[in-house]
Length: 257
View 1 (spheres, rainbow, N blue to C red):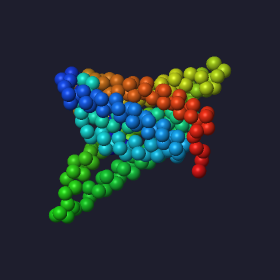
View 2: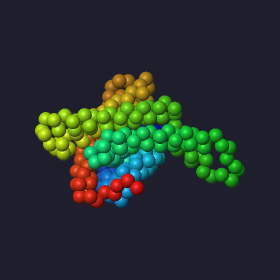
View 3: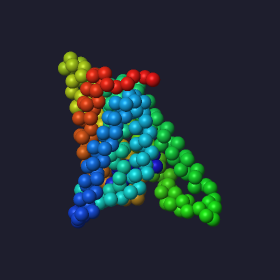
View 4: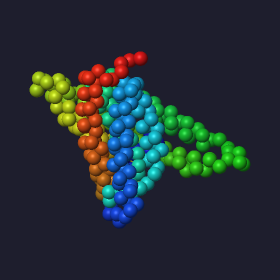
């Protein structure tokens, strides 16, 4: 991906909470409802295909939205956090309802989408614009990111998403064997797999992207402030996974076309 929507939260510091900040906070909370709701709607309308669609859409939009910087909840942070977190929600829903293979396919679709977007956005910059062009300066501003940041984000995404799917199913096997209930403890595997994967993602991206640029103390601060957002979005997606499972059991999810 072009840049990581979560770990690019910059240093944690208090900011004045005026009308602008309050509106940003309302919009951010609303984005959780909107984006997670869209994941459920896509699953209800299109089944597995809807989950793959949301992976592609969220990957592209998060890489653009991340360039927007706002003040909210006492932090100066980039957007794209919820969109990026929704890709973990998608893989957890697929793991729970459709199997490990379907979840892994969603991950590789996200990887392919990220790579394709990276190639095309950098390819656009090779063109020489005409005298009447007005868009190229803006495109360069948005997509002229450093290769180091691109590699760091891409590496973090691949490793953490693959870990999320693997760990989800390992925990499922473990809890099913211990409790005798294959459907039980969904909240445990959902939260533990996602939160641990987000730790790996945060550490990889921050270390690779900023290692050598900032002292270790500041790197740790970036990691901690970034992870706070992941905790929030990860805990909120658990009810959505439960609802998706209920929809699947009720026969409301379309099968393969």
